Image (tube, rainbow, N blue to C red):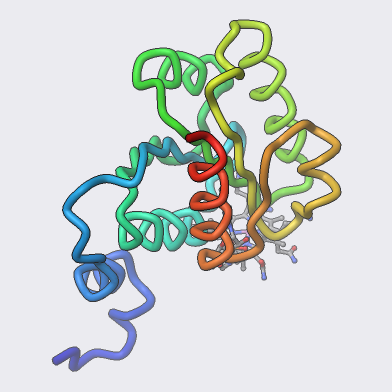
Amino acid sequence: MIKDPFILFSKKGLEIIKPLLQDDASESKGTIIICTVKGDMHDIGKNLVTMMLEGAGFNVIDLGVDLSVEKVIEQVAQVKPDILGLSALLTTTMPEMKKVIEALEEKGLRNNLKVIIGGAPVDAAFAQKIGADGFGDDATEAVKQARRLIAGKT
Ligand code: B12
């Protein structure tokens, strides 16, 4: 029983509800790397998306916030995830998403990887413009997009 209502809005609160969202499925549905792009410290939405994806059975590696293009590339090359999720909450950091996709293409890492993006200033048109494979305006849509993209891969 949660006595303090404010705990629900904290990271600790998210930890408490996490097991309640967990799927029974023991087998991973795929691996997803997620992060907030360089220059951007916002992570509340990304953390919610991470939790919902984990709850839906995906293996999610959360790299955190303010991730440089180089760091993202390094991790994708190492882990070889099925999906890369990028979050941006500032109009000034949205261009970082395009830079990541361009760098993935340059390094030959784009072929087997799907990219989904999200965050308040981002929309489907922007996703299409920068060459992302999907966009989610909330955590539920993020799960739908991840399922769609994984299904398309096999
Ligand atoms: C909380 C907050 C902060 C907190 C962040 C705390 C944290 N740990 O995240 C703090 C105080 C640190 C902060 C700082 C700043 N902020 Co701020 N912040 C906000 C605020 C109020 C809420 C954001 C939020 O958490 N929303 C709730 C979550 C649940 O929603 P969400 O992030 O959109 O995520 C959902 C979807 O977008 C989607 N989603 C998100 N990520 C992803 C990823 C994928 C892959 C997918 C599929 C989906 C997805 O699913 C999520 C769940 O539903 C917004 C205003 C607003 N109403 O959005 C301003 C806002 C984003 N901030 C703003 C600004 C300007 C700043 C600062 C520059 C302020 C300053 N002068 O210092 C700094 C920037 C710091 C930095 N370098 O990042 C502006 C941005 C304006 C713009 N157009 O760029 C906003 C819009 C406020 C405003 N109206 O001016 N901020």
